[in-house]
Image (cartoon, rainbow, N blue to C red):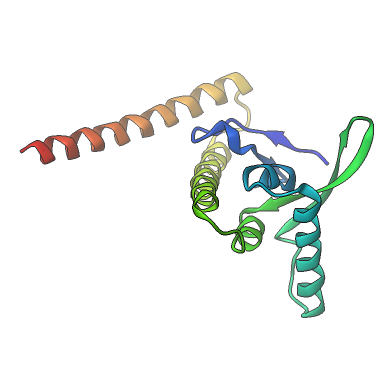
Length: 158
């Protein structure tokens, strides 16, 4: 499975990565963040795949099957696209689960925006120059957000 991990400006604990131009997250990190056993998350995904396939629903755009190595053994994992993530975690409940859901949604949005911006850059630029341009774009966004916060704070004082 060929993946590349990108730095997310939101929360580095989320472990989002890209796979074939899509933002995805491993079922291992979903299990960890939501306090579930990974084998149970894998089973839940496989049950959904089986159920949806029986109903002639497309699941290819939700989950990407893969493997990972741990202590010399190979284990199954799934990479969840934004839609696959949403589909699986809808059933997770509790205040902490809600917080993680919101963090992942925000991170997916930011990562997808970064991918769009990277695709609009000329591809003949060096990776270092592309990185610098992306950092500049991100810094401008953060400055705009800071300006908005300051503006709202000044309005609240008045």
